[in-house]
Amino acid sequence: MGVQYRRPTATHPAAPPPTPALGVPDAEPQQWHRGMTLVATISLFIGTRAAWTTAMASSPPVAAAISACYAAILGCAVLSLLVRTRRALIRVDAAVLVTAVALVICGYLLDHAGSDEGVLTAQAANEILHGRPVYGQSWPWLFAEHGVLVTKTMSGGADYTYGYPPLTALLAAPVHAVVHSTAAATLVPTVALLASSLLLWFLLPAPWRSAATAVCLGFGFLPHYAYSGYPAITALALLIPVVVRWPSTGEGGHLGPGGVLRAACLGAACAAQQLAWFLAPFLLIGLYAVRRGELGPRRALAVTARYTATAALTWSAVNAYFAVQDFPAWLNGILLPMEQKAILHGQGVMGISYYFTDGSSRLDYYSYGSQLLLFGLLVATLLFVRRLGPTLTVLPWIAFYLATRSQDGYFLMMTPLWLAAAATVPAAAFATAWQPRPPRLTGRRAKAAVAAGLLAPALVCVVIAAASPPPLRMSLTPHFAKHGSGIGVTTIDVRAVNTTGTALEPHFASRTGQGASDWWTIASGPAVLPPHASADYRVEPAGGFRVMPGGRGPGSYLIAVTGTPMTITSARIQAPTSTVGT
Image (cartoon, rainbow, N blue to C red):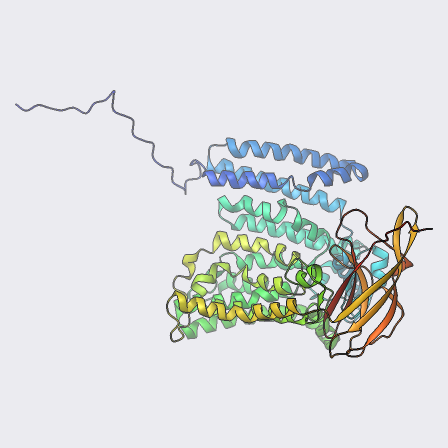
């Protein structure tokens, strides 16, 4: 009789509990989902204290609402770490979203006067209501009346016209009929931001939703662009349904209602602000490549053509009235940001010539580099779509880093699209996408060489712009006066030598740190400085007095700029070494 073995009971360790399925609503939430919720909750603190301080001085009920939002933030922070089920954590995500919406509404009630873009959009809405032309009209009095900054141009002027596609002004027109102020133009982007944030929240997978709250509403920068009346926020709102799961558009060769809606939203976004124009070709290349890998060349081309035609018809419908009214003015208006030659501004490589050297005689090469980089990225997307496909919502904005206007708004305002793609467009969606196969383009080294060749022309242009010397050699003799408790400049005598072979028409301004002052008046000196000639100028600041900064800051500079060709020369204004009399 054999020995029978029995499985021990008391000493045998208990089997581990089964891993909860991710698709079960009441399963234990993932730890990174908790972290995402907590980060979104923390992001709501940004800017909230400043809003509360302002509200206490101007609108105590709004301050009370913000105080209640503080309690909600703290409660959500506790719950994000405390709840034990996915369903409960999703409810916390919803509470974070509601709190963020409340804070944005409070912020709008405190700040809805608008910036230059909001002021121009409000005036355009008013003109639409009265049946008057919108494009080609100059409204300089708006900026003095509302106290907002104006975009100065390198030709010594400023841009007082409406330079955006018309959709945001059209949407603001009925609001302006009721609210006769700039608040009408700032309300449209604010509502668009809130609506798109809610839409993105519902479209994203549950663990990503709080990230949408943080990016759209929590960090503070997008709401402030909306309060300022930026038409780009309207474009962003329309692009969100376009970007979410965009590789699925046209599956099976049929657009369907969803694909038609996405195409219409793309066309409407392009009719709201020019930034959408830069995203559109990347999406079309990606869509064609994905569909060709599934359907073959003819059917892929057909579905991409229908998508493009739907977007184009939507764009045309929005613009038709204005194009018929005055085609040249409308065309010049919507192309204005690309052609106006606005004064340098931003955080990109143009800062080499603006902030860190004495200037450049070839600023146009920054623009050439930006255009070449955009073209190179488009070609790289076509050649390497399987690799670059997930980045198509980021690539278009890289080109702005080389432009003469490269402020962070061009990047910040489209960041929700980055998140939408990261959460809904995995790399696997491009596994079977079509890629052209040029001969000898095999292996990593060959592909790296092609990529470098596509980007090299842009780099060469940047090097030319940054390495070029300033066109003028300037020596300054400033004259100071004391006004109140400050010392400032009243006039500057400038000895300028044109070192180039081109006649230049200089315009003068000053800068302390970033940005530039209003144009200085040329009291004496020639309007045009011939090639290799020298001249004496006397220039005066706007208002006849420019305060000199104190302390050990970067100091003040006199800049001389020209529009054609685009050049800049900077010379430091030496502070007075002795006491200035009154």
